[in-house]
Length: 64
Image (cartoon, rainbow, N blue to C red; front, side, top):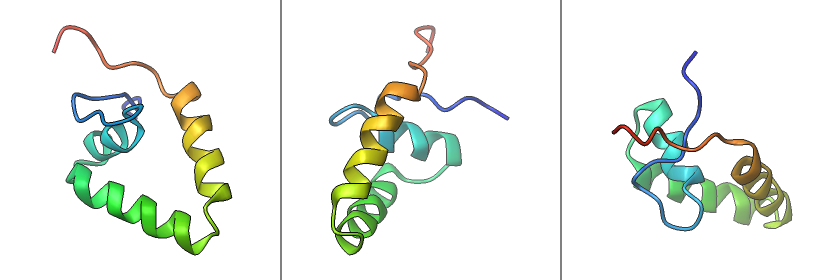
């Protein structure tokens, strides 16, 4: 399995862009889905997951 990585589709920390790149999806769709899930879960768990992914996800390869 390929490692998750922060991508050039970076807005805040590159988490949604990296997930979108890893899944082969459009980054806008991933961001909208994340926002909807966060709002429906009263935002706190979504924010906590985002921060954890920001710390855990490896950086993008610099040879791209």
